[in-house]
Picture 1 (tube, rainbow, N blue to C red):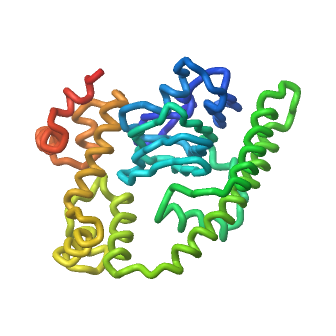
Picture 2 (cartoon, helix red, strand yellow):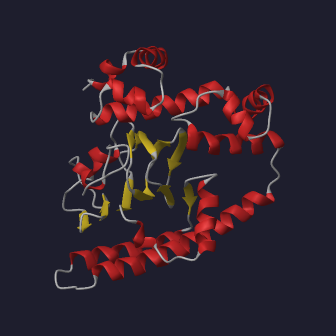
Length: 303
């Protein structure tokens, strides 16, 4: 599978390959650790990777028990029983903690036609949900329905004489998509019923802009202009809402991206510096070392 975008980090075929993994045409993967074992599997090693990585496929993780704590685009999420985490392609993820009894399932795909032909209202709703959270809690009944579909999909992928695997996977994914829209609509209705302050609304809009532009824009004036605010007022609102300064949020995004690119070992330090719009490699090195405590080259070569 060839990826032609700007980055070349974690791709779909770097997913764990063991008896608990089902793959269709190198573009659709299902994996889990539902079968308890005393030995560490490839799946467990993959899930608990200690380094941040940039994901070039869409992935949904669902938790049946235990605890998994992750950082996704600098937002920390804690998965417990009946939680699902939706990770969009291009996100930077980092595993922070996995309990020994954690049971996780994964549905991942590299081509969006697996959820194509969905009505625009549902797509808009999912976009709205993902702008505020990637974690969706389910009830026992809702998770049971998801698991039932998950196991049926696995059976079809494994069935050697079944001729219409792509078609049936797309149909199952459509059901999952519609169910998620229903769950997300309920979540958003409850959230909108709770009053939010002006500083919280400004902070949410700032974070949305930051996710889109951090690789090229590190100046607070850029974000203030986009929000039609003065830099001073934006700084005050972000600090009041989050307890952190704008420059700290920007730096965290840039450093997380830099770490993912360096650890992929696909690029030189100079290339990473260029990708993140630094004026030169020396400036990038000083910026990185001040935040991380070591130079980019040292971090890249850590075992």
